[in-house]
Image (cartoon, rainbow, N blue to C red):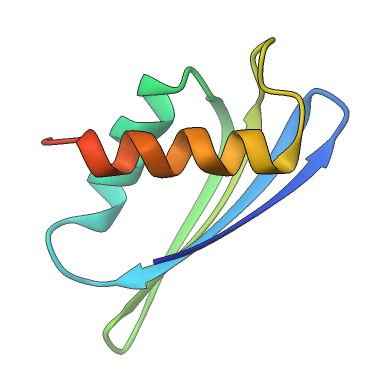
Length: 82
């Protein structure tokens, strides 16, 4: 799984690329909820065996940098059992 985060003020653009196994979109949305990243817009595409997610979120206080958002999301994804 590859995750890129770009901060723009209080918002972040998150791009996730993963294999299309075990419902990656469901797991990602659960992880976003767990980290309290409020989704404004989401675009999900399937290309061959890959899932591509482009998501615009509002970032809560306490997560101020791209690395903090990415690490919080990765931690949450490891624990999610949706």
